[in-house]
Image (cartoon, rainbow, N blue to C red; front, side, top):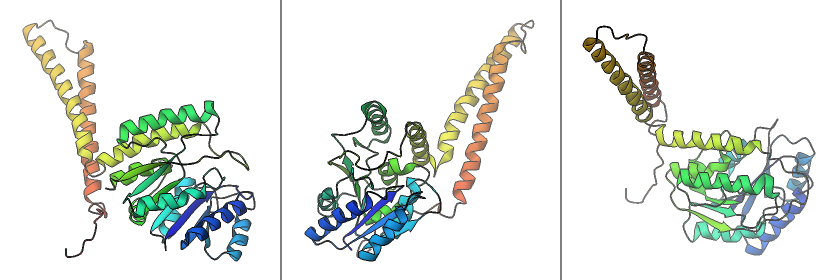
Length: 313
């Protein structure tokens, strides 16, 4: 199959018929074999009924229904597991992403050899104060932390090779950072394409200011896990050593001061409590590192590395 088009949605019943017709038009013009996977993330309207109606008219349409709202990441993860296309396209259901971009996105993956191509909504039709300014800030931070030169990590319109969607697990609210997950999984060729962004035609936005706070915390989490999940002692051991050495240094200074001056009040000094605290923190970090290593070493997927099969090997 040429394409799997994954569309997570929440209360988007009005836009689904128009979006489906638009996708069908693009697929027919380009003679692609395809599937459209709609993921109903616990909609309270009749989105699922609309999906079933569309499915009855077009067998290329498939649906996944959640009993309640689990979030976009869960929807993408389930759809990735079900996708069979050589290239997987993700897009939003609100008609702000254009299906006309799909052929070029697919070409960049198939012909140019990109593992992942992310859309860049260079010209947006969102509220500047609540979306554009915070979005630019978090995109800049993510670029700096991850080293991936993308302008719009949160753009829903992306193209993936089949190997990428089968090689990453999207959890929590990590859908914003799938390029980062892909990089940590060993996929290095990540590109970007300027895409058309349209004003929302139906419904209201499902994202508020909380996504930026959650996004920053998710970035810290994914950076830590990506770097130290296989070697937790490298993080905890380093900081544990620094705290322990600082505590030992202060302790030695206090002991020498007591030897030189017998009237030196050892336990009444702020340095005494600082040394004690540093030693305890250092030992706790060491213990955390050891426990992390034990968990990592005994994990059933500790050696689950992505291996590319090559003929003759």
